[in-house]
Amino acid sequence: MKSFLKSITLCAVLALLLPAAVKAEIQIIETDSSYVMGDNDSKIDARRIAIQEAKRKALEMSGTYVESLTEVKNMALTKDEIRAYTAGVVETEIISEEMKGTTANPEIYIKAKCKIDTDVLMKHINRFRESEEIKEQLASAMKENESLKQERDNIIKKLSAERDKSKVDDIRKKLDTVLAKEEVNDEVGKVWSSLAYKIYRKDFVESKEDIQAMSNKEMDNASAVLKKAVKINPDNPRTHMLLATIYQKKGDIANAEREMREAIEGNPSNPLFHMRLALLLRDNGRYTEALKEFKIVHNLKPRYAPVLFHTGMTYKAMNDCRGAVPYLKRFITISQRNENLPERMKTDAINAMKECKGEPKGERIQKRPFRNR
Image (cartoon, rainbow, N blue to C red; front, side):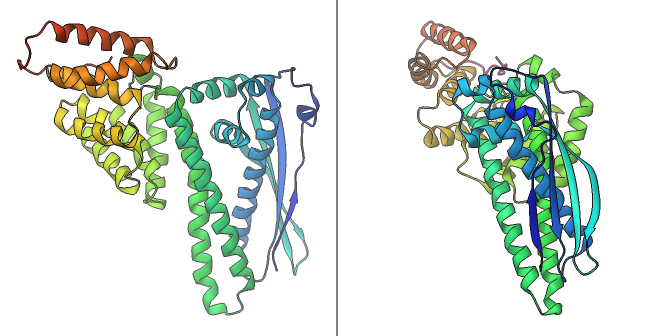
């Protein structure tokens, strides 16, 4: 009969005892996890389970520490938001493992360490808070991880209670699948955090600085992780979206579009996925197709300022001022109450409307290639 022996050890207890106003540059937190093997458990799976528990506890303790920081308190973040922001930034490593217990009931003991660079963490949190889309995706990732943990726990209970040896192998296969998804999600989470910080901007447009922020080596490493993740869990739309981003950065538009459409097929009601596809199509001169995707985003989020801006500017790139002006007018009205929108977007919208007023009504001239603003 298996059981979890839950215990948490703080290597730096002072991390929780220091006054909130004191900010240390680096904090080290240690956690441990034990798993007592039952008759149907394999040593390999037991080790993987113990590692997942140690990592999960490390994240929880990291969130508790981050919650104590003065800067975070001033932001009035919820516990779930703190956990989501922290997940992809905190570095966790397994520092030791050993076998304990008895011959009849062997126990695998795992010790993990996580490092928190508060300066880096705060930069990420500030960046993530600028975008509702990034926050939604991080929250979605956390929910998925919780769902996988619950599924894993249910399978472990079933495995522990199974007395028919002929059914044990099938249950183990299900456990292996769930553990593989959990493990790869840890890797994808770090890729997502890196991409969200280095590439994505709150208006979904990449500047030259953003593109250059991720080196070829980083993109290759991210691509390897994401391709592995897609094989293990092909139904995860977020992984397809991230892989599409990497392909787009590398100039592989065909594969970027394919992965983006896979993401949409997995979650057709996610406005971020449609927005990313729309921008990909628009940047490659496929304006009519892009407008179709922008329309879907607009239907899902009618007062979402970026889609109003990009729809208007796409019509403007087509030299269709009748189509452009209504969207740009609505964007300018909403942007006056949204301080988070870049001033450059507001300036571009105003200038586009001024240019439209100078063109003969209804006149269409040759389409101009869209340039990222």
